Length: 137
Image 1 (cartoon, helix red, strand yellow):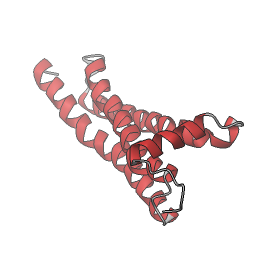
Image 2 (image 1 turned 135 degrees about the vertical axis):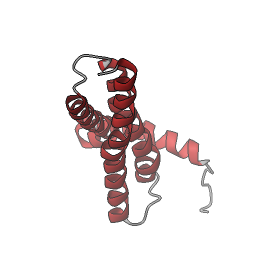
Image 3 (image 1 turned 180 degrees about the vertical axis):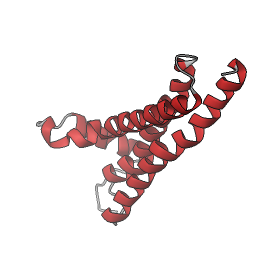
């Protein structure tokens, strides 16, 4: 540790880095850091919405219980994507914890694929089958 260095916890260092990013002079330079997790969450939510629509079409569910099935199939993947991307990728970028950028990109793509595709593919049939059984469609 260099002489005169201030020791910070991981949380304090992360808070400091986020403050640096949010106070950056030209926000055009840091927009992927600021808005990236939200954009990925929206993409996962849209994917979940489409997968849910496809299952509802196959089950001929029409307009029956659209909101509960959409909440589970679109909102859950969007929230999970934002949470996992921020905790497992974005924080490592800000703290320079990952020495391998390719590994970090692969991890981000794997998170996006699993929360944006696999989670809706598991949740949508379960929710839509439950609705179909309860409402006898």
